[in-house]
Image: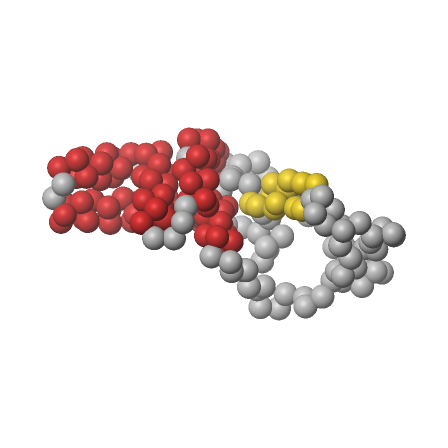
Length: 187
């Protein structure tokens, strides 16, 4: 639950042989213990915000930055006797527009996965800019196909003003797609 919005995550566990093994198992909420497990936790690619978070957090990780905790986030783990809140009541079935939007998100996640990884792996500078541009085009090819085609055509022609204008229109369309999706799922 992120600020009232349910967010799904992908969690991968990796054995870390370089971490020291302690004589006793770590206790729950013991942040000082070292274990031989690394976690790779990232949002599942099932919404525009998740795609944005993947790109943003990958870039932050690459730059050696950590995301800041939201305002009001607890500074420490909950006490041992903490009772979690009850599970939410299942939501109603998605509407036809919501299903259509999520179908596009699935297509984007599948067709743009390698480009998203390239953004995460790219070094700062020109390589990063090219990777982000390729990701923007990939998203637009599903979300805004006419704007993506216009940008690629302008890119082939090579006119700087035409390219800049077509690029701006493509990015605006991607942003509208994201905004429209957020509106569809607002409670």
